Image (tube, rainbow, N blue to C red; front, side, top):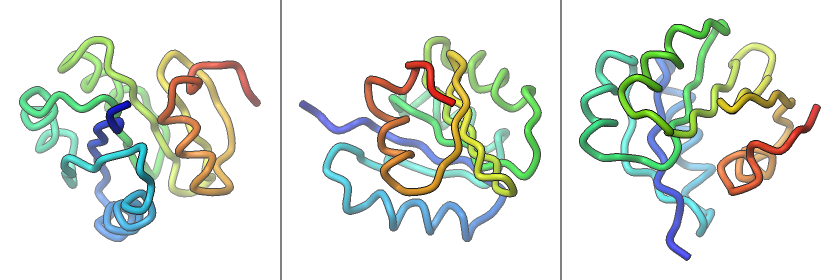
Length: 116
């Protein structure tokens, strides 16, 4: 099984680099790129066609996610709120992230199963 191709978007470089380091040891994921804004990410996402986009946000507003969905319909978006550690996958589920395992589960095939 090929690794899930991941693209990370956040205005926090610390978050991006930290997440890249955490996920680098996970064989089921491959980080294919990152960007510090949605505007910078859109063209790269359209060109690189990731399986999953991880969006690190300071506030939870749907506009950024909608822009990503328009760029590539059917893409899985995982939105992590950097203040509350809430995780949203767009199909929509919501759960709290307490470990890298929580994030890996959201990236995998069961990400859209109902969980609180």
